[in-house]
Image (cartoon, rainbow, N blue to C red):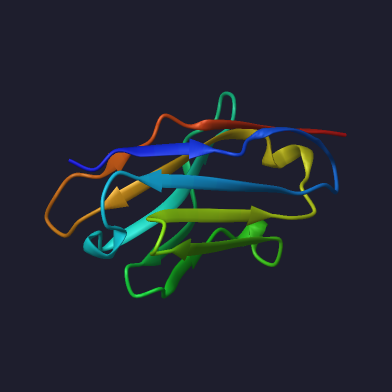
Length: 117
C-alpha cells in the first residue's frame, strides 16, 4: 500500500505562512483522491482540502478558503498545502490522506502546525 510522509509543519506567528508537503511512495496518478485533514486539541478531525488525481479541487473547508491552496506535483508524487495568513485557530496536527476507489483511506503520520497570536 502507498506510504505517505508529511513535512513542513512548525511554529509560526499569526499572519505567517507555511507550506506542507506530502510525499507518496508511488505514482499519485494512481490514487483517485488525495487531501489534507487536521485535528486540533480536543476537537474532531476535519477535512481541510481535497483534490482528485485529475487535479480538480473538490473541497475546501469554509474557514480556510482564500487562505489555503492545495496543489500537487505528479512528477514528484507530492501533494502540497500552501497556508497563508495563518490564524491561531489553524493550530492542529495536519494529516495527508490518499484514497483509491473501493479501498480504505491511507493516512500519513501527521505534522504539527502551531500558530502563535
